[in-house]
Length: 226
Image (cartoon, rainbow, N blue to C red; front, side, top):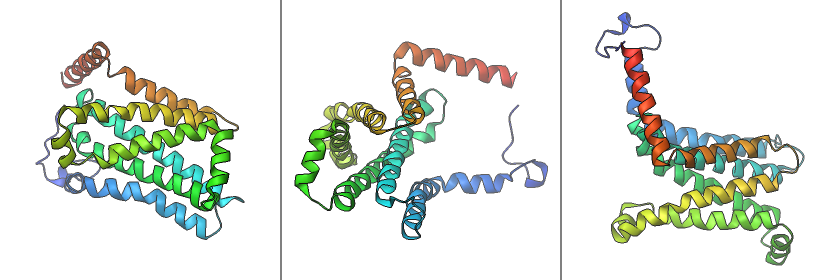
């Protein structure tokens, strides 16, 4: 059944379509608000003493978690467009990726600045003893390179190499989920969920799997419209 978006609001049930069009027309703004909201909550919790008994560690962990969420969301934009037919998702892929880097940078700065107060000797000893931190650091370097080269100027300058470079985002994703899995001391459910999501995003890039999913979507669409 197809909906007529030109119908008066009184003839439609649920959320009014003028409001729906307003939200859709300002979606980029809502993406930014949604991306910055976790930071606002985190800052408020930090300065009001609601971040557990170890606020620096909690802030470090939460910024890392948020970075991973935005990284997975950015990776989901391409299959959302190509498989689910949500074409607008592509428009927000770079934005979500930049927010993933932003929170990853905060995660790093909290670690070296607040936790270790830029004591590089102590940081080096920690890196030697905890290899999962090295994985996170390598992932951060990749995200830094991708963030810097994400703009159109670099895309034109690098040409075909731009796509090759930005495929490294999947390597960064793999390093991040391994970093997360290795860092967790207890309760591995969320790291395992992140690993499965990343594997699913990699799997649906396989041409055969992608074609099967697109065909299934077309069949379902025809079924519900008939």
